[in-house]
Image (cartoon, rainbow, N blue to C red; front, side, top):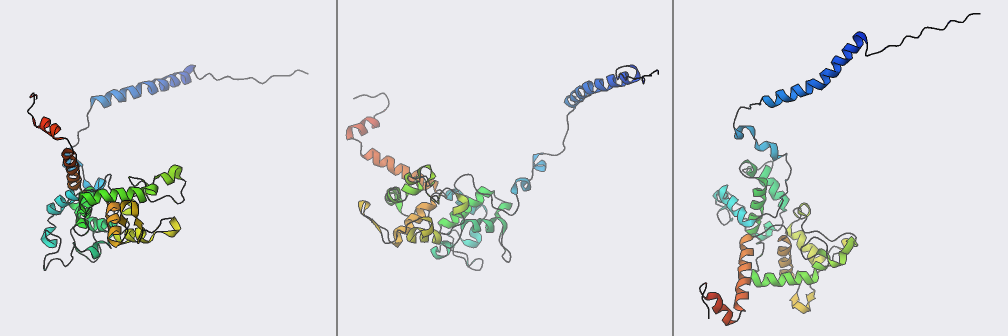
Length: 301
């Protein structure tokens, strides 16, 4: 019996019409991007309008949410914003309020100690239902609004109300009683919390989101009475005999002011403190050294 094998047809894509089509496709894939690149470089897209038309505040403004500062708000800079936005027209230059325009006394400690910085920011930036008040974000940046918040707070509760000598004492008292857990700069990295062994971790005073959501009254309560479930001891009524300090109500408020110093800054006071230190160091120099410094350049004994 004779067996017949089925014919086998082989298709070569590179032969005939199929080969030509494939070659053209490869050529287009190579040439087309190069042509596009050259054409793109040769032509420039022209956009009409100046920068003020192209850029809008709404692009970076965000929604109705707080934009936290990158650095500590400045009280002196906040005073500039207070003047720029003409806040004194209603609140007065001293913050006590103008008759017929505002009954709010911004210098009241009882009022200000119950206010959260974040609530004050939200009110100034976005307003509050039922109340009519100019919105700061229409004329000022988010950082400037935070500066304004802390300037307004300083009218009632100054950041550092105790003066240079008392401030230095509070620094020492904080270092001997608080920094062991919270760290000298307030990051919650004190010696007792090395390698994050404490649970929960001590509060990080540099955490703006946490402490902008605290009133001064709350900070006072935490320092005075402690937080038992977090291991925070209460200091009210105790005494630091080495530094001759009794933690009474007045001194607890000094510690509150010191903690708030981690959240804002008074540049003018810091400069004054530095000048005071320089003056103190200068007064400690021997008289001969002072005479030498007073001599004109090039003069010798």
